[in-house]
Length: 422
Image (cartoon, rainbow, N blue to C red; front, side, top):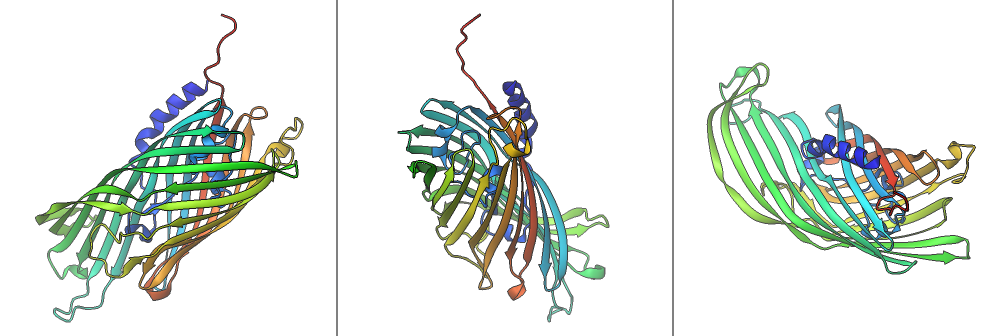
């Protein structure tokens, strides 16, 4: 049954993953956009990805693949609702996206996994008005738009060297397009023509993620886990082009090109920073778990698709996640709520982006539920919510107060079973 569900879901969502706009943040203009990682169950614990779950696929550490007991297929989507505030006012936005599709196949000590997901996203629309130009005395209005992002296809393997030590590696292919547009107009039709600039960049390249997990018994009752991942610096090949045009704007916003100039494409490598994480936690099997994880990302060398942004810079990024889960009675046959997994977490992230000398930080509180489908140890419906704040209104910037709601379906089944009877 699970094979039919996988085939149908893949056909339904494969085209959506690569065409959706899954961000509504003005900060996604910088670098390659807003990066989103982790599954619904790990995001519900503040982004904690150090637990080797036997029925949920952990996309943050490939060493966890070998802990799976059953063939696991998972698909997830989310809805983000954001209130953007500045000194000049506020605006509300909403987006809905597919977050990932992945499959894992365990074989005794070794397991394989493949999947696809949006890795980063760009999506914003901003309008502002400048003071009158001293040269002609005209007030100009500016409209900035951006969309696109980087998608990722991965293939990974995890191996259990022993009951305590697990290792794994993911090979990832990244690709996508990011387009930004800027239109300058003069209100009240004081000029016949307006100006438009479109920047477009195509990205592609390979990356790797190496992971390790270690588990040990503590006082014969508790399990102690340690997790580490490392992603070395890698290059994305980028082909960028710019088009500058004189346009007219209709009453409905339709753009008519009067004259345009194409600037030659720029072919260059974009260096993406290295990243590593280290975490530890303690828990009781099929009962509870609590852990702490730290993630370090090197200094990003990007500011935007073109080197004409002077108010932006980068520094190293730090992220701390604290979270866990609790299951009242995993083996209960009489109480469904006792078999539900209750998750919670908090996180703090120094994103590394600096605008107008102001660091852009991100804070979040997360909650989630793992709802069993069928019997004990089977499939799950995972739902979660994230409440957070990113940015600041200092130095003319924008603060984002967001609520993210996400849901995933984790289907588990036994494959490759040798029949005893025909």
